[in-house]
Each structure stands twice: as C-alpha cells, then as structure tokens.
Image (cartoon, rainbow, N blue to C red; front, top):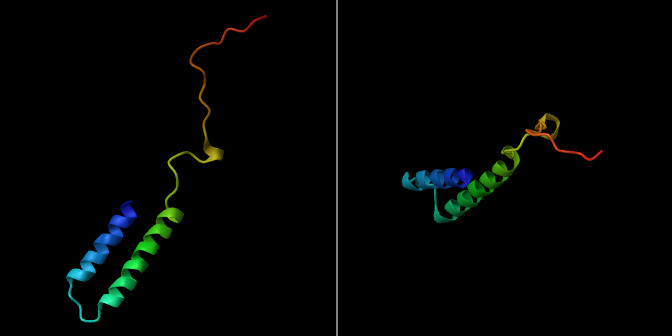
Length: 69
C-alpha cells in the first residue's frame, strides 16, 4: 500500500511540474510503469512479518500438563 502511495506521489509530482515532454500518452506510460514497479518491488523486496523458519524460537510451556501414569 505504501508503494502505491509513493508511486501516486511521484506521478502527481511529475504532473505538477508541467513539463513540455510529458504528453498525455507519456503520462499514461509513466503511470503504468510506476504502478508496475511499485507492485513488483513491494512483492519482491518486502518480506512477511514472521521470523524465518531457521530462526523461529519455540516457546516453552508456562504450566505443566498433567499426564496419566
């Protein structure tokens, strides 16, 4: 979500500069490129919030479980 917000901000910044080379057709290409880069970048670069399997720590029980003899 943050990647798309950044792409939208970059697109708005480009549009506000009123550059002569930025025609409506080029603006569409820039928009698609920015959104595609943001989507791909966020899915590849950003990992999940969980620990990796080799670094997982197992929790110890806080109470004893009664077992039958």
